[in-house]
Length: 291
Image (cartoon, one colour):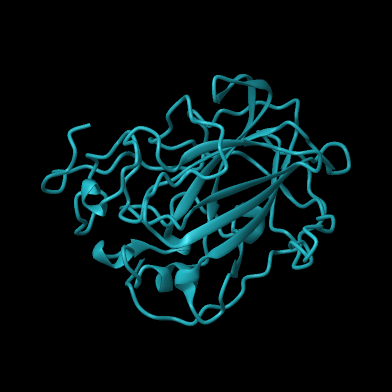
């Protein structure tokens, strides 16, 4: 079943509060912040609970090594602003923060294109990736690392991702520990978790009626029909989203999630379960870049 682009009201999705759980393969806990875990006027935040553990999933077909360490990963790509605030905690040690953990994310642009794979057809009817008018680097846009602070927190400035066949709207994430920042990227260490972050259907449906998303016509996969999302809510990577302006979704969103890792575990996502799909096939859109 797929969802069509239509107007729906936006409702705030609170994180599922799930207690207990045991460490699973890959050693990761994914859980939404409690509603109280939000920035206050002074920039402070309350502690988040440690939630159900889950396995890692595949990294998917669009991973590239060498992403840059930076807060803003847009490179001028157009779309609805999205601020991601993620906290890394040690799920094996009372959910204490993991300072120095490197959180890496990557996702498609508003029309379903990934940097490094800009000739892959996103499905439906999309403009060529080059038509968005940005000066983004075709090899690096919408990819990056952030290093967790003393509270285990990282923040990214990006855009709400678009969609491509056959996947629902999502963001890929890896958590690394033990490495160092070198020459503007992150080197060494190991990957403790590979996963994906997801968005409520009703929010995605409203976003996709806006420009530039609306220029990618067709149907996209709903959460319930996605090959990776397993319906577990926040414990399966569903972000808690707060609109910047309740009556104007174009102003952007703030997304929150807690990533509870086992620092001794290793899971790169290569060959692991959970689907992820293969690169879209077919003829690239007219005038799509050759590289």
